[in-house]
Amino acid sequence: MQAEHIETFIEALTYTFKTMMDCEVRRNDSLQEKELLPPYTISAVVGLSGDAVGAVVLSLTEATALKVASILLQEEITELDVDAIDAVGELTNVVAGRAKAQITSHRLLISLPNVVIGKEHSVMFPRDVQPFTVPCDTDCGPLLMAVGFVNGRAKQNK
Image (cartoon, rainbow, N blue to C red; front, side, top):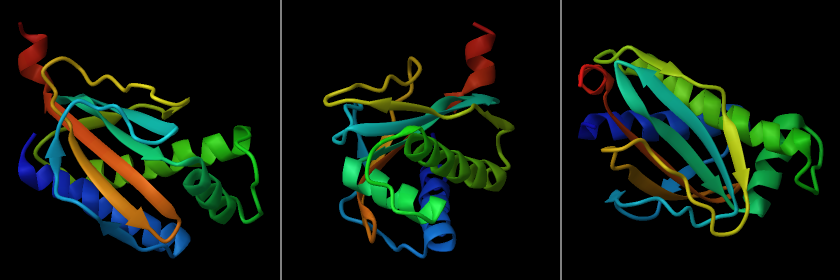
């Protein structure tokens, strides 16, 4: 994955939070390349395919997820029910979709979001994909975005 692509995803995250929730996003650390054991209990995963293979992950605390869901659904959400989980998945889908539209060097397709809930869960990226992680603080609470993809055409021809 090229460095400018991660910046595209960061811009998509910032734009989505600002326009959909009037919520500021602040990066609180530098980009990191590492295996992904999300630090928070909820992770929404959107797969990337087409000219590249990989994924976009948003990992949130339960409190952040509830705040996000409350804003998006325009009602107070106090428990992780189906609607709250769907809201987190849809938010991740919007971030991935916005970034996908900006990346013209690859024809990317995005999957439906999957949401994983539980302490110390792992998110596996495709083989040879080293995700970049971007820890953030937002007005809604902390989150971590992880993005990684590699050229998919070369892998399919092997």
